[in-house]
Length: 517
Image 1 (cartoon, rainbow, N blue to C red):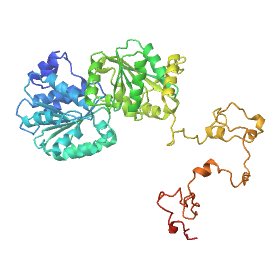
Image 2: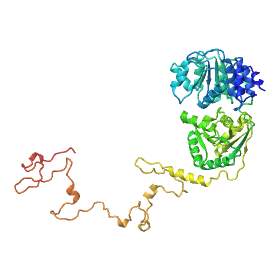
Image 3: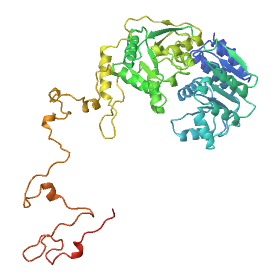
Image 4: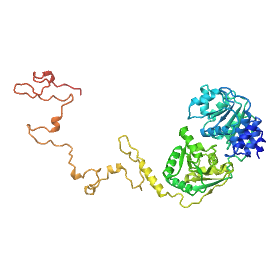
């Protein structure tokens, strides 16, 4: 069986590295693709995930690169990947299978320093593995020349389209020489990818190992009915994790990044060994999480669809779809993280009442019915989850207005027992005896309030009576007010004059002024 890879036309160095890695028999996509790649033909490879698509272009590329030498800033081959994790995994494959070669390789991904990448490009690289954004950035800085590329690989082409890389792919292809070999691989082939094929590939050979958008037969797929409430879904997920038999590592997929972090924190509070992985994390944290998961230091990994494509972690025994994927093709990639390379796997999908539309699209795509797992009380929240929901409700603060108070509720259901503060502030008119005196926010009874006549009468007092405190402290202001009469002492000097005792106040300061009506 050691002759099966060598029979495909690979060099002895590549064959020895493959056997040293523990592989003796090529997969179906490898057996079909490798001879055509060695003949330098354009290829469209369609195969379900987990069938060895990466090795089907890495192995023949190593054989073709044995002759020749790279020049500075001019890579000989270019491999485009949609995500950093997938690009790093392809780089690991080149290191593993190319250990008998003296080939230079550069990995251009975001989240890391430009300096190391530029140094490698300046020395010259035989293999350039990159994400489209970082590669175009370095090209714009004049650090890459693509006129020497002989082989272009577009991996996970449908994912490239989903992530909005179609314009970047077109620009990169326009920068490459017209006479090149192009290899396109994907697990699904939507109509948009066909347009890409017609534009950039020349007479390609289509290799379709399995029916498009199919799932592996080694994966046991089940559906679990759950409630739409987040706390109920988390309780159902924990029940499935605890009931799963033979669970070694498991990936839990969420549709939104913020749900990834929330679910990971919830599982961690319940004592599970869990990590999080999503696109908003920095590259160092993403790499550390993946390494810990591969090394079995983490049992569970909550992830977004950034981990749904191409990640090769053989120990994954279970996949949990916490959310039904919006795009049906993502379901194929998600559950493809388990049951790889002939192993058996289990995939559970939590289905809420609002997920019927997306579930119908998945069943129509894979053309295979998925049975519901009948569980009693799976959607009922556990007591611990109820306590967790209480803690979350305490942490949530009501929206406050700019003046510091809570915003009034615009509408409230008639059956709701909660009253708005505005309703309390303006109670319906009732006898004074019916008003409770214990409510501090209510006004005092009518008997306790002083009468407020329309024109209050002035208190009777003599001319010599002292003015009130307010009248005494109030200083006359305004242009229409007459100045107060001066207070003369025995010598005829105004004792209250601002000029002191130097003399009487000038007459012109005592005159009244006219104002416009």
